[in-house]
Length: 639
Image (tube, rainbow, N blue to C red; front, side, top):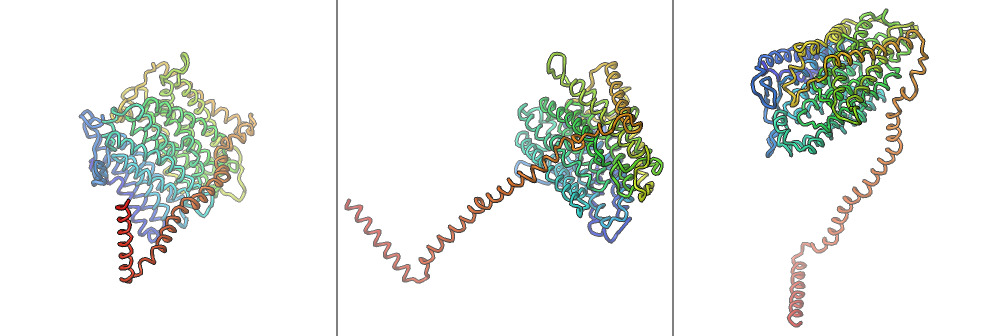
């Protein structure tokens, strides 16, 4: 069954090809149905391949520490260049299958949702063309057997994000947001490419099985340098400090794009890359990754508490949740990172699609201050959104509680000493706990502003529930967000399904060392923090016991003025510097090139009279030359 892996990316690629050639003729809604069928077929093949992987002997020996559960499918020899041999190959192992399952599963639900959401759009078929290409690119990224194939998918999702974020490019803000995402991600691409080159020149391979086998030969300094380059790459794709600035503006794209890019696919690519290359990561680099993740989680959570756009809240929330994933990686808890990637795809995909349903029902209104009481007009959307809210807030037994609690426990166990008994892990845990409280607060604020309280919308607006193509994915995702934690419950060892499945992929499997009493105490504290955040939101936004203007200072509403400061710099001194550089380029670089051409023309004009084409001129020249030569020789002899 594992031999069918090539069909997983091939089906959405085929959907893209058909829509490219005949999309406008196929028309609405059949173009959406075709794209959804291609995605659903990919999900079905992923399930079959996953079943084949489970049929392999997990205890058998395998490359790179994977046991027997791995299979490489080589499509063709791609780059046989000297000592560099890169195959277009796909890798089937526990990590790639875990990623492919939720990418295709959630991706299919987003495709189905888009059939209703994009109805009536003049570029209907083009949207699904891009969406299928996006899915193909992400699958190549997670299924690639080596860094080069992964980079193909990496660049593919970057290109598709540009096309989808700026899909409504007639809006200047959407066009700018697309360019901003594209340019920011190129910074991360630099880190990816240099890390790939360095690994090749040092270890002589770019395949993941080869890197897992040879990584112990890396010197610590080289390993740390490569790890930091990979962190730069991951920070660009997964929107970590300081490269997060593209993601909030990416909300300019259609809401299904927000769900696809920011929940199930592109933004998790950086997390996947670091987890996949875990044998390369050094202890020094892991600490830096943990600090970046914790700082990003807190920073973005503070920004989310004062946003008014329903999608901007979720955008900053996504950045914050990605910070949790980086904190898990930096703590060595790779399973916890992937666990949160999966649960995040469920509840954040649900929340984005739920916000899209609200926007659809409210006539494209996105300001939460003009909503309120929508649970009555939109009961399905409200009910499913509430499930997503409880999951991301970390309320047990919803899925987000289990994955977030595992990350906080991993942070707590960081062993590095700062001073006396205080450990780095304790500080990271405190940051994660405060972020958890803020998450519960700002998601409660959003839920109350949108679905509770009195009507705040204009009488011309008539809220209504979305069609079945949009509400069905909401119901399915709500179910997954509610019970998705069962894939890795810590209560009984045999219930750690995801951990046992993924452990063979990692060079150093992480095992929690805290006693049960400590685990329960930390889980209780995290739950109290979540309940506390919800209680503050209830007091402020439902019972008006706290002046809400105090909770929305301009500093947080403008997210510490980081993005606006960058924009002012780029539009002011930055633009002036660019203009100066362009003038210098024209004067010196172009001038040097033009000068070489002028010199060649000048020499040509000087030499041209000597090339008259008359034999007598050439004979005279030879004679004069001979006389000069004889005179010169005579003088030398005389002297």
